[in-house]
Length: 362
Length: 232
Figure (cartoon, chains in turn red, purple):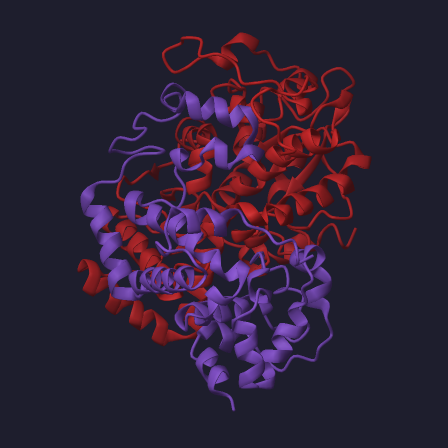
């Protein structure tokens, strides 16, 4: 029990209202419905204020961790984001990306440890843009905010993370994402050893977390190790290691903190199935991989296609059925104007014959 | 003796990430790259703290410093509070500044990262945008991504009112004032210089390797796709 409670030692202040939103490159590309759900849940379900500022840009974190963007440059880009936040009259920065969250915490810590770097950043920002900045009063990841409101969401729940037929809690693999707390353990709820940010949501909403050997292992993004085609063996090998480790515990779904991790754990299941014929979920299918916004959205009764779950490679319908969620299967393939846009090719990971689009083995 | 060490110590990440390493190897034990490649972050830290110019230069020209995935799993584990991942970041930065990165297969890949991610940042203000993830270069993204890519406007419009247009919302086009501020930041803070350095040394190396047109599209695709499979 002492170990289960140890997350309490790592607490941080999470602002209750008035957030300045830091958009994620990866989340908006692969999970735009999750981003919309986060904003909608805060505005409509929780009555909170959040600003989506059209002048906000990438933090350039993927470039930084690919080593093409120098530290001095990313610090100045971050300083510009803070300046925009000041200009808009906000002081609680909330970012929707684990890479960005790691970058913001690293930059703030570097400025604190090496004050000359903050001074230089101020000079660069002034010279480049004529801007000044004040540091935020609070820095949180969007999942921290969702964690903060987990009981309020539970109180409004339409569905729970429970098997509707058996009444048993769903078994959930939670994946935190390395840069949430491995760089600065005190910046994450529960630290790097027993992070509680997703586990807290899962437990509040009726599910049960799976503890498995490679729970804290990297998803395998590895920046240059995915972005450069020649290196992708590294990426899939690490996802493979996690999937092999979790499979014996028969998880009902995976929930990821980081949009990159969610994408890789989803897409590499497709690739492994096409390459090896191996699948890790029920009935020869893959394990559905959710973002925490999708998990919250389902609990609150949002339509799965409004949450963007049609953009996953591993079909989510088996999970929706397990939770007893009502949905229109045909609406999955509708565009914004309500017109049918066709279906994606079939894939082994969805228990279908291999698609004819690619031969991945080549 | 110590020239490269002194250059590395100018990087605050080395000052933060390197105390005396006792060679316990915990970083290697937990490292995802060490599991996949013939790679040992413990040895890198040991080489750097040796201050041996010859050994550090060999490191700066090697594939070895390019294996790390910068997950930073090493950071919370080190009993001495070191961060091998930070030291790697500083080595990579120095390797590029000195033009040594083009001497290794993995190092030469920096050109692809600059052209794909770096140029996209200056063009769009984002590291990744949907049209950048071309299905033919990303077969692992599968048929659903192909479907999204082929129906991007109809699909993204379900989630954003401003797909590829200006305004508040996901996947917007940034206004010219914002893009010029980002460009100016890159010019003033050394980002542009890093991009130019990567291009210049890549072009030199490409010609040296027999690419008559220098670091052209053919060289780019070769560094992006070539894997000698001699690293595992």
